[in-house]
Image (cartoon, rainbow, N blue to C red):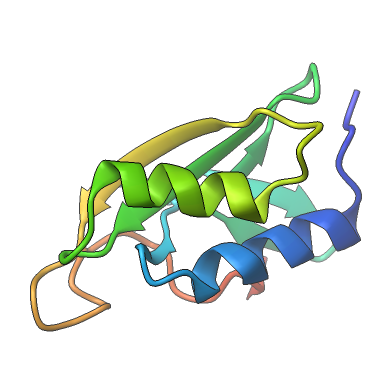
Length: 109
């Protein structure tokens, strides 16, 4: 059962991508990590059948794992404990360094 509404997922993706610790959300090397919604998908967020949320990110080059964890905790409602995956670290000097399919969180399908 999906415990996440479309609005909650959109808001979460926006809050996560505004964090200085997170360079971008990550759809993973195959581009399949996403929340699939009617007519679109949100790369980097995956809702499992039991409602558990996975968050896949590319960590900013000038930050720490603790900073990423803190950013995720602040972005997620206190009632939820998502699984965090740091899929990559950005290339220094650019926020678009990694080669993952993880551009805009409002990607059309």
